[in-house]
Amino acid sequence: MADQSPAMALCRAQLEAGHSRTWIAAEIGMSDSHVRRYLLGHYAGTKSLVNIEKAIVKRFDRRICPHDGQEKQPVQCQRVAFRSRPYGFPDAETLWLACQTCPHKPQQPGAQS
Image 1 (cartoon, helix red, strand yellow):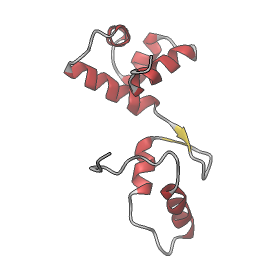
Image 2 (cartoon, one colour):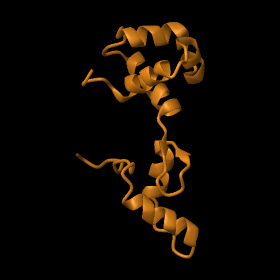
Image 3 (tube, one colour):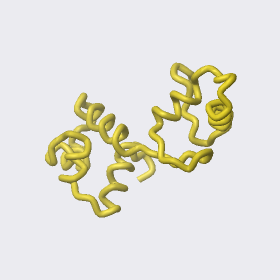
Protein backbone atom coordinates (compact mmCIF):
# COMPACT_ATOMS: atom_id res chain seq x y z
CA MET A 1 0.00 0.00 0.00
CA ALA A 2 1.81 3.11 -1.28
CA ASP A 3 -0.22 5.65 0.71
CA GLN A 4 0.26 3.84 4.01
CA SER A 5 1.08 6.19 6.90
CA PRO A 6 4.36 5.78 8.78
CA ALA A 7 2.37 4.79 11.89
CA MET A 8 0.46 2.10 9.99
CA ALA A 9 3.73 0.74 8.58
CA LEU A 10 5.22 0.62 12.09
CA CYS A 11 2.13 -1.14 13.46
CA ARG A 12 2.07 -3.69 10.64
CA ALA A 13 5.80 -4.32 11.12
CA GLN A 14 5.10 -5.24 14.75
CA LEU A 15 2.41 -7.68 13.63
CA GLU A 16 4.76 -9.18 11.03
CA ALA A 17 7.39 -9.57 13.75
CA GLY A 18 4.95 -11.84 15.59
CA HIS A 19 3.50 -9.45 18.14
CA SER A 20 -0.22 -9.46 18.82
CA ARG A 21 -2.65 -6.57 18.66
CA THR A 22 -3.02 -6.91 22.43
CA TRP A 23 0.74 -6.52 22.89
CA ILE A 24 0.82 -3.47 20.60
CA ALA A 25 -2.11 -1.96 22.49
CA ALA A 26 -0.36 -2.46 25.83
CA GLU A 27 2.86 -0.95 24.47
CA ILE A 28 1.10 2.22 23.29
CA GLY A 29 -1.23 2.47 26.28
CA MET A 30 -4.49 1.89 24.42
CA SER A 31 -7.04 -0.90 24.22
CA ASP A 32 -6.96 -3.82 21.79
CA SER A 33 -10.19 -2.56 20.24
CA HIS A 34 -8.53 0.79 19.44
CA VAL A 35 -5.70 -1.00 17.64
CA ARG A 36 -8.14 -3.31 15.81
CA ARG A 37 -10.27 -0.39 14.64
CA TYR A 38 -7.14 1.54 13.60
CA LEU A 39 -5.88 -1.39 11.51
CA LEU A 40 -9.30 -1.68 9.86
CA GLY A 41 -9.27 2.01 8.96
CA HIS A 42 -12.24 3.00 11.13
CA TYR A 43 -10.57 6.13 12.51
CA ALA A 44 -10.18 8.03 9.24
CA GLY A 45 -10.41 11.78 9.75
CA THR A 46 -10.90 11.73 13.51
CA LYS A 47 -8.97 13.08 16.47
CA SER A 48 -8.61 9.47 17.61
CA LEU A 49 -6.58 8.75 14.46
CA VAL A 50 -4.08 11.47 15.36
CA ASN A 51 -3.82 10.20 18.95
CA ILE A 52 -3.26 6.56 18.07
CA GLU A 53 -0.75 7.38 15.32
CA LYS A 54 1.23 9.62 17.68
CA ALA A 55 1.31 6.82 20.26
CA ILE A 56 2.46 4.25 17.68
CA VAL A 57 5.22 6.48 16.30
CA LYS A 58 6.40 7.50 19.77
CA ARG A 59 6.74 3.87 20.86
CA PHE A 60 7.97 2.12 17.71
CA ASP A 61 9.82 4.63 15.51
CA ARG A 62 13.48 3.79 16.08
CA ARG A 63 16.60 3.91 13.96
CA ILE A 64 20.18 2.75 14.35
CA CYS A 65 22.58 5.68 14.63
CA PRO A 66 25.30 5.37 11.96
CA HIS A 67 27.72 7.19 14.28
CA ASP A 68 27.50 5.12 17.47
CA GLY A 69 25.42 2.09 16.42
CA GLN A 70 22.81 2.67 19.13
CA GLU A 71 19.06 2.58 18.69
CA LYS A 72 17.59 6.10 18.84
CA GLN A 73 14.19 7.73 18.75
CA PRO A 74 13.65 10.57 16.27
CA VAL A 75 13.31 13.01 19.18
CA GLN A 76 16.83 12.12 20.30
CA CYS A 77 18.15 12.75 16.79
CA GLN A 78 16.32 16.07 16.68
CA ARG A 79 17.63 17.16 20.07
CA VAL A 80 21.27 16.58 19.07
CA ALA A 81 21.11 17.70 15.44
CA PHE A 82 19.42 21.05 16.10
CA ARG A 83 21.23 22.20 19.21
CA SER A 84 24.13 24.63 19.03
CA ARG A 85 27.52 23.17 18.19
CA PRO A 86 29.06 21.99 21.50
CA TYR A 87 32.57 23.50 21.33
CA GLY A 88 35.00 22.26 23.99
CA PHE A 89 33.33 18.85 24.37
CA PRO A 90 35.05 16.57 21.81
CA ASP A 91 32.68 13.60 22.08
CA ALA A 92 29.56 15.76 21.91
CA GLU A 93 31.01 17.80 19.04
CA THR A 94 31.89 14.65 17.08
CA LEU A 95 28.33 13.36 17.50
CA TRP A 96 26.86 16.74 16.54
CA LEU A 97 29.02 16.87 13.40
CA ALA A 98 27.94 13.34 12.43
CA CYS A 99 24.29 14.32 12.90
CA GLN A 100 24.62 17.19 10.43
CA THR A 101 25.10 14.79 7.49
CA CYS A 102 23.13 11.80 8.84
CA PRO A 103 20.50 10.26 6.54
CA HIS A 104 18.18 10.00 9.58
CA LYS A 105 18.41 13.71 10.44
CA PRO A 106 14.84 14.93 10.91
CA GLN A 107 13.52 18.04 9.23
CA GLN A 108 14.09 21.23 11.20
CA PRO A 109 10.96 22.15 13.17
CA GLY A 110 9.10 24.87 11.31
CA ALA A 111 11.04 24.28 8.07
CA GLN A 112 9.04 24.07 4.90
CA SER A 113 9.53 21.26 2.38
